[in-house]
Length: 326
Image (cartoon, rainbow, N blue to C red; front, side, top):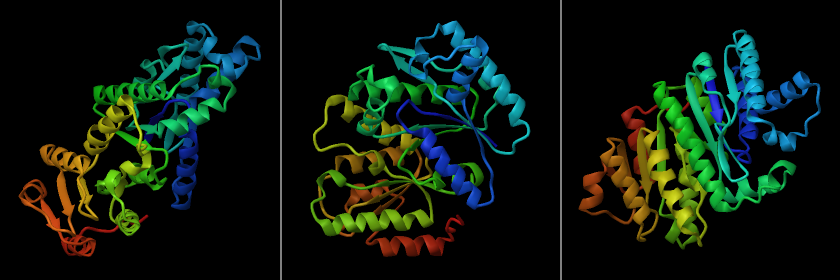
């Protein structure tokens, strides 16, 4: 299994991969991670007998970086043939000095021929905080809009490369359980679900607890894609709103099997309605849990509706939906 993982600087993709490697090891699967960034700096310094400041590596001439990148991928290809499961940790783009740049010589993606592409994303505030804490990126003075648009380009670029090779591409938030990547790699038939909640207008703490308990329980049955892992603040601008809608409706719902919506209390939820509609029109299986009752619109666009989470889980068991074994 060969997995090519991207994510913009500050997304902490490496941290997520380290957690995934440890999780896989506990389940008797070894994964070898090749960090393109670290290998690139090492190659440039060795080849030129220099000690480049890694914080300024993107100031290197583009030809220098391209040659070093080629050498790095030649090295990866020579070593990965001895590994059963390989993860290549890289970026697809950089945003440096207000210019988007390719981070990879994509010729070598053909040579590596990954089975799966993955992009790690995160909440823009957390990404900016990490960037501002590093010597390399604090000088760039990126704002939240810069981070969001860069992350959008990173996803779009990786997705385009995956589609051109007819390979699957998954978008995984940093805060997700490490079992998500593990499941995608080693249990490809595990069902994936997007869970939808009307969080923006929920007021009762009891309802929030019901939602949190449901989100935890449903993980026994599905690999979960939960929009709450990249939450939108109460106050947001046009870019944050647009990126949230794009992420939830296009990125997440596109990569799952089932949409499961749980309305814990009777509140207006345009987002939840849009997610049901998106799942329905994209031929996903849509389940609705409406303890307060439902109308013809919900019934028409859901494959099945339930009066409680208990009724929903009973349905899964009776249907023979197997629990995940990891």
